[in-house]
Length: 271
Ligand code: 2HA
Ligand code: ZN
Image (cartoon, rainbow, N blue to C red; front, side, top):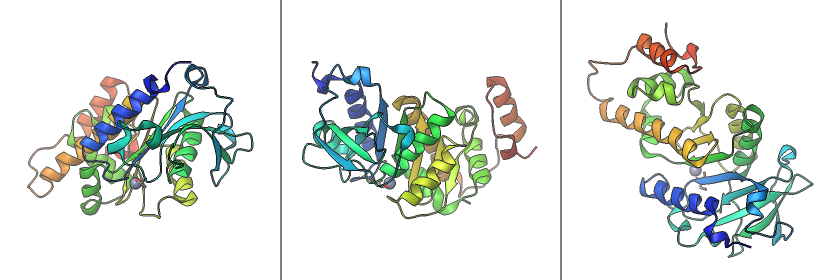
């Protein structure tokens, strides 16, 4: 058996959480990540027949039965993952009853998965139905995106349109736009269901005045989506209080989307 602390998926989680912490997006216990693993790969590092303990998930995830995820822990700090992955991360498998997580590794201090597990697993179910390659759900509190939430309309078309205008490549990176949920209580099945509903249509969902959810095939791709929105929000916050004398026009946005051959939300442009 190989040492799990050397597994690429543990290494990736360490690097990603440290990077996001350094960007200032994941203060204290802010943010959480879940990453669907390949059981064959995990079994090089763990006896997957050995369950350390079981933890109820509080809802039913039938389409995820038997699937393994590496997830960040509740109350744990991204800052600390790299130094102590076995306490701050866990590997869970969704049990046959669809309502229990079998802990295969991690949460070594008796802890458990993120309080946002409903939003994560429900989003995985929604994204996997659209794209079987989707493996990652990432939640974070990016600073400028959050700031923008306080001063910009939170309508999906209006918000996406403004973000697209802020950097030339935005419409190419997230042509499907950004979904928006109103402020809601976090950590609940209700916000989980609402997030998953949006995830049928969007890979990026803003939780108003809280943060962002992203979905993608890899940690890198998902991070890249959120990073691009955050960059656009930063440009917005640097310029919103100044007279705007130049902009990227809707015709130019359309030209970009067509040049790069992306399927974009035509209804989010005013043409
Ligand atoms: O886990 O970010 O939304 C901490 C959070 C909750
Ligand atoms: Zn949060």
